[in-house]
Image (cartoon, rainbow, N blue to C red):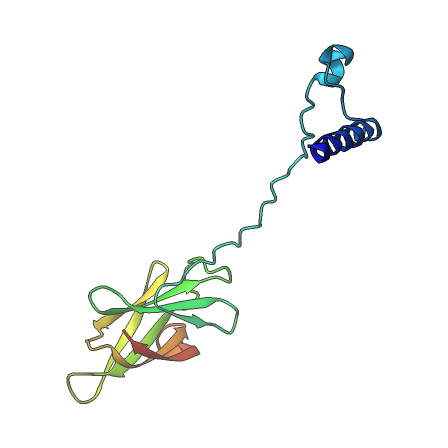
Length: 165
């Protein structure tokens, strides 16, 4: 019991010394001004939402995309119904009117010996074939683009498209 009383006395001395040195607030709120008793809200740190720049979506050209020498693009596809369609696009991949008068297309006939040859005529922002491309679509299509009419027509571009569709 002597040990217990001695331990309580030591704790009392240590706690009173600690209260004086650590500046613990008094237990009687009447002795403390009201301004010190009011809880202070935590300081708000202004937060700014950082918006990540969204990459602009690059337009998608349907079918096979072919780059032209002048920096523009061609979109090659076999449209519904089996007609070959060549669409024209500017440098930003937006549809434009063809700068070509006409074209010629040829490909191997998958159902017989020989080739299918067809003119490509302008229709809106594309050149469309007069003849159908027959399935299975597993052959090379040779495209020749022309400027001019009749005997004065001049070949300006030619492409070979390995079409597997």
